[in-house]
Length: 134
Image (cartoon, rainbow, N blue to C red):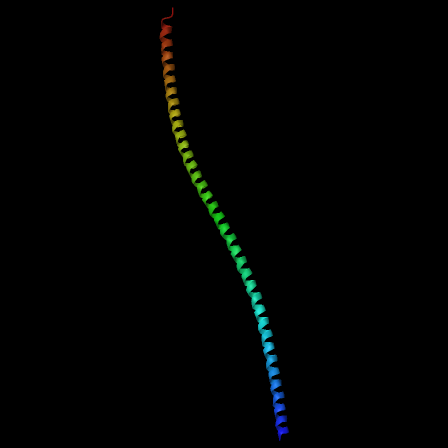
């Protein structure tokens, strides 16, 4: 009877040992899987951090380009304003030149009229002087 109990106890011990060994193997497998997943997660996190850094650098370059474009726009606006001012000055000068040309033409017409008048007076004087010639 004692030997049956010892045999029964030995069987249960062996069965428990097998069960414990199986549980340990499952725990070890679970630990390996968890470790692999953590390493994979760590790798993905590092890749994500690098992508975020790259995106930050790209945003900095975009902002620098936007600032450069804004500066160019300011220069273009200033140049356009200056061109408009110069164009306005040219228009004023053309108007002044046109007015002076009109005045010069009027003066030339008056000079022609005066010259014609002088010519007429000169002819009349010639005629009168010829009457007195001996």
